[in-house]
Image (cartoon, rainbow, N blue to C red; front, side, top):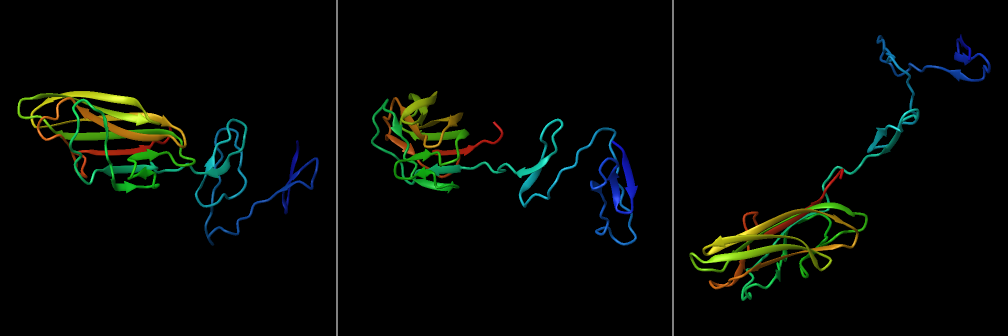
Length: 219
């Protein structure tokens, strides 16, 4: 292909109706702007995109285009706790932890009546889920065996066991789970001996009985 140059710009030597011109009207008066070519083939993109879009590679041999940027926040996200202790608990029985209060709940997906998180529409993916449970049950020197579970759609899918001695003890669990829209998560806890006062203690800080979760990005 041959190229010609005229006052109107660059012309295709085979078809002079095809033209390339440069517009420098936006350059500041008295300023020289330089286009530096890389040592390789280069393709130019078309369009300016819109607010929130990013220039995205189309792969080898394909011009880049503007695409909507991926979400940058770890939501849905929640942290919940109990407003009162759970008492009169039977040894060795798994109890759903009654998380009826929220520190935060970005998508309103935690049910404070039924104590569960349900994945909202369009928010399927991998989630990091965490729970700490603090119990007061056995007298000093009594060895206790406790367990904590994450339930998905009514069945245990992750659990952790711990032994402790004395009046106060607890357990914690952290798991990454793949969740689909409509899946729901609950947290359960049990101790084999509630001989002291049979309560699952409450507090809205991370050192006591609390649960949280958030959607992960890029996995």
